Image 1 (cartoon, rainbow, N blue to C red):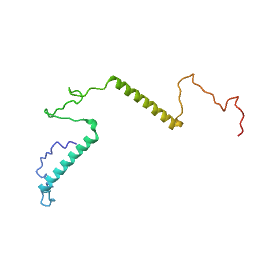
Image 2: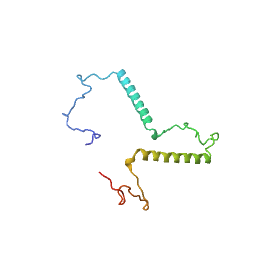
Image 3: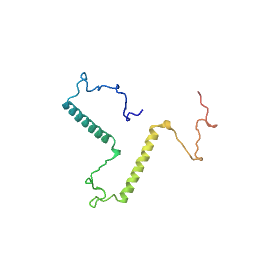
Image 4: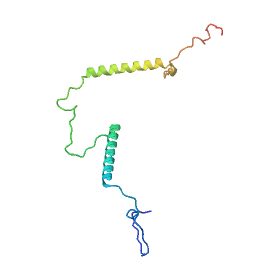
Length: 138
């Protein structure tokens, strides 16, 4: 199917009627309504673009205007000094301690997870099922 190819005819008896310009055709839309519909559709498209920009900040901003520019807040000459190495090391230690406390809290609150060990020398004895355990009554 190739609708872009026009129809050619050599028969003089071939004819057709225009559906839109015939006398019994339905009334077409007024220019005022058509303009208002176009405005509404343009506003809806703009709102859709704004909603997509809001919901997908990872897309980024594109600009084709050569006069559009911005300054880097962090690398400018008057930017505040960066954090000292001592403070960065202290922050890392505090975060490591908080991570360890979180792991302990999860282990405490979820005893069903169990304990895993990769050390072959790690072992333990069952106090109740050993051979020298005292006999108990059921």
